[in-house]
Image (cartoon, rainbow, N blue to C red; front, side):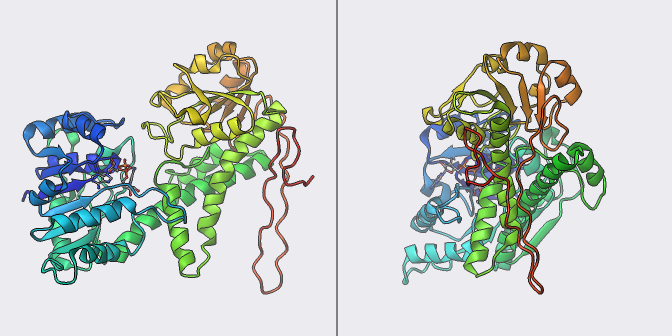
Length: 490
Ligand SMILES: NC(=O)c1ccc[n+]([C@@H]2O[C@H](COP(=O)([O-])OP(=O)(O)OC[C@H]3O[C@@H](n4cnc5c(N)ncnc54)[C@H](O)[C@@H]3O)[C@@H](O)[C@H]2O)c1
């Protein structure tokens, strides 16, 4: 049965959710407060790069199943179910900034006229379902007879940017959490066409999608636990890659050998520059903050974060070792999007490395097929193509795994450079072809070619005291521009 749905916040998640829910037959009104984004959405154009989304927006707007508005009240009046998809960016204390969620709670209270089910799709700290209920009731006031005219359901989103439409229509699972069984049933009905894979058009069908129904806290925790696991898996591959450097093993072959074990799996087991984007880092910090609030020290989660940050610094440190000085060095960064397939630069590893290099006095150029501008403050000069970005540089760093980078003419690229160092921080090149094109080649956890790799300084773990757990006290040393240890060690 088709439902009347409002989607609040039409960014990466909200616009995809709105278009996909309209595509499977629901009547959806998307609410967006940003006037520029709204104008583009109303004309059927996504305000960011997301494959397949423009076509879906165009067809669902034309069919009348989807509209976009800035009018919150009108959207509430035209719906029984409200999906909340506003941003929850990182806050100062590790927990997400809930300003937009609080604003939505106020608008819901102001516009509540009949019963609504409020579905939180934004990734929100565990306990937010109850917080949202309390916020709305607070705004309604103690005397309001609408205090029980809504229920809250957690419906975490697992889509990946760059594959968002495909992921939304063919999810691995749908997770719903609520303390209200009737609200759970209603939202499960919304998903029925997706669960049963009755997807119109060319999207094809798959096996029935598993539906997991739980209480609110379990639904909210499932999202955080999933992202924390993915982040930890990436960091695991990166830590093993660093050990590969010591022992002369090749991480690509190691992770292939691991990933073929069906208990492990290959996905998210790629060594490189680590994760970025709007989700993994933010969600991991939020989970750590939640644990700390309860007095629990989540060592594994903190280690995953520290290894991820270490990958970015590792690239900077390796460049310093190879170039001997960063001040005045010219470096080209290939790839600014946090991953291939998107133009999203939130917590982008490539941009972070570029800014760390600029901070150390390097001149940085960059090229990304989808990121065409950056704020002036970054100090990074954006170029039209990879060859222009490589002109006169001492080193190139591949920071995003765009397929078109693997197809670059390595000889022509090398001819543009002043130096000869190629740092393949996404392990996309075949070392032998890079070498035959005249480069010195560095990668992550793969044998370097033509490069003397200086052993990083590693402090050994303190010996375990009897009855106590061993504690790792050391880390890689970082170096200043002149090659001195920044912590004053040897
Ligand atoms: N981007 C992803 O890949 C992804 C995946 C899973 C979950 N999430 C989570 O989903 C949430 C949204 O993420 P996003 O990437 O779509 O963020 P986004 O910043 O792209 O989109 C949020 C949108 O909400 C709009 N907005 C804010 N307040 C509003 C209001 N009161 N009324 C109407 N519109 C309002 C903003 O203008 C913006 O367009 C976050 O909590 C995020 O953690 C994101």
